[in-house]
Image 1 (tube, rainbow, N blue to C red):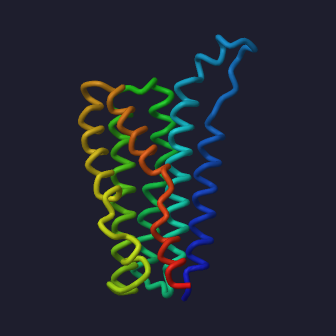
Image 2: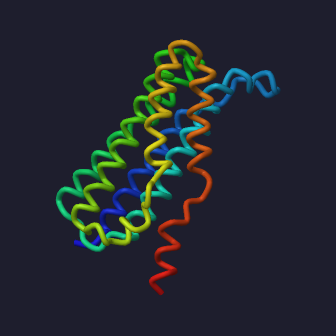
Length: 193
């Protein structure tokens, strides 16, 4: 099987995740700026989570572009990633509704950490099928961002119990780190042409 069906299924799940998150946003009661203040934590958590889901969609799309053959292991690894990503709406809502309280902030980081681990497992599953000389292997290189992100999440989870603002800043930092376009896979394809 090629990766088209896997990618289409994943795209659908990610679209549903974003839809669920936006449906959780409640319209404020009033019509003035003060009424928006009450929904600001929920909206802020939504924006951050939307960015994270977008980052995963973008990177997943690029990674699937390198896949020539899909195995059962890759399918299960992909489902594992989608499971953790599907929990983002829950922890996003919990964190926003509770104004970035300690435990919801830590759980948000826990879901991000598990999604990062699941993404790593998916990469390894693809590499096991495609081989060490595959496009994905060549494009990953040292993968510093991929290795640093889980460490930042662990620090942020720990910081959630002491200072939620620092934890939140770390989550934003990691998202910003991934927002900077990663051209490795595109460069490898250009070199092959």
